Image (cartoon, rainbow, N blue to C red; front, side, top):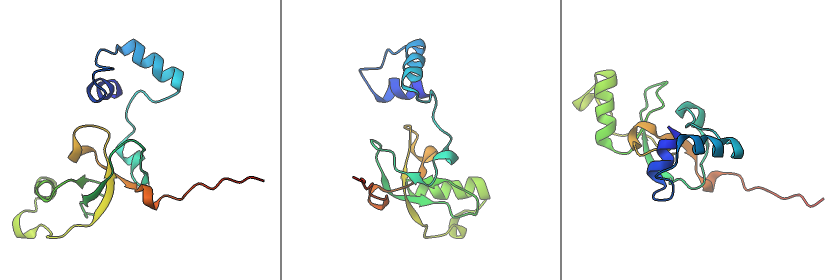
Length: 126
């Protein structure tokens, strides 16, 4: 999955990157060959270089980590997952900062701490 991301999102430089070369580079740089699980990333610091969405909608059902880019998408989620539609769907949702690793925005959002909320590193010159 990581190779598909590199080939598709970092055009034209890596469009023809082979599986063997990709795995070699991952090994040399000691980086993962696949995307981390959405639950693994949820609630962590924002990843530098990825857009931070400031108004991702939070499902609100206890235990559900799903985030959405629009009201229409979250309403479809409520209908599909919980059988709730129309007037039964909440009219307001909490919002959060979010990022995603692929082009399928509404299925791969994960909650992050925005750059402005992250602690500033302090250098100790002792």
